[in-house]
Length: 496
Image (cartoon, rainbow, N blue to C red):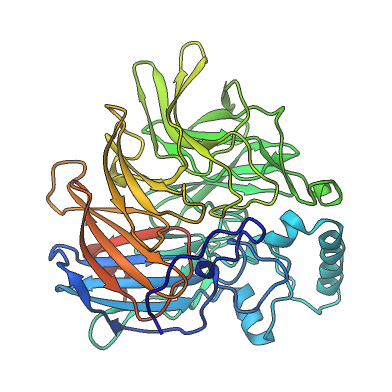
């Protein structure tokens, strides 16, 4: 039953032991929801939240492991409906049919040590003899990280895999319907490398820019996906040990700026003291690379070196002004090899402003907030240009987010705080008012949970006050990234 419960205390012995990480098994479609408070009449569209949901228990747990489940709340005419579905990638379909998950996950690869190395060799032998499916690495994703809307299509993303294009339909009452079916998308065979979980869209041209990494080869790719399906890929850099994740980056009118962090991918590390393929290399200082948007093979990367090691998951925003690139992001001065994202073992982050001088190449940085804020949200129409506000998820409680700080980047000061109360959130998504003129004229939406219940919170982004809470009909596991689609975008998804 979806009833109230107190948040369990974080456990450092079992970082993913919180009940909010527990999976659910029930798929639901078109459940009418009761609104507590006032649902803004202008909210007309769909909120989608992706995340992993393991069908079968594993010896080790990690937030990135398990099959993907997409949760959807549709707002229409002052009403709201909830649906959820597994994302049935080729790998997930195999797991469903087999009744077990025989594949190694990120937990094994970041804490399994020599036993994981042995299991990896056994897995390869089974593939060779037809006992496991012969997926290439980019075909074997669960695609449980993010959601992309592009060119009248909806994709689930995982940055080590191909995008998974979802089948979309309407039910008899005209509401959006998803069943998790779809296909890995290669765009007629032209995409042969991983696709980012944080692609950046150019609203003027409709093009999508992806930085994808092949960890094993150590190759980092830029893929540019145009409207109509044309796609162009180039190699940005290659080398080992490769950066473990280039998870986020900035798209300006002329360039792409991305972090090359101190967290590196090294398979030999499974046999080492950290028992992990991830290692934080303190001799490799954080640096930023800059490439042209029309980058081609062989084009140079301009590097801006910082003075200290660090790891960046997410960038709030960045833009060019006064002869420099300005970047705002949470940064970790260290990061454990177990990759304990959103758990009590994740270290403290700092919110930093870097200035990359375009003439001299010098980098300066200032710590704006010495507090564990992560997963920043902005008005994404302003990505790559000067923006005043960022909404920062407060992760100082040790598990997920206990609230949101509205931060004024121009004045470098807090501009309001939204307390989540006795539930925990994952990512504040800004939804602009249709004809709004101010940058914070709109709403924040987040999916809150505690392992026994879940709800949608809608708050006024200007005043940081709750507008309504909408209880969901079942618990929802803690998840990853979310997406808002307005009614025009959702209508365009239906082509029949």
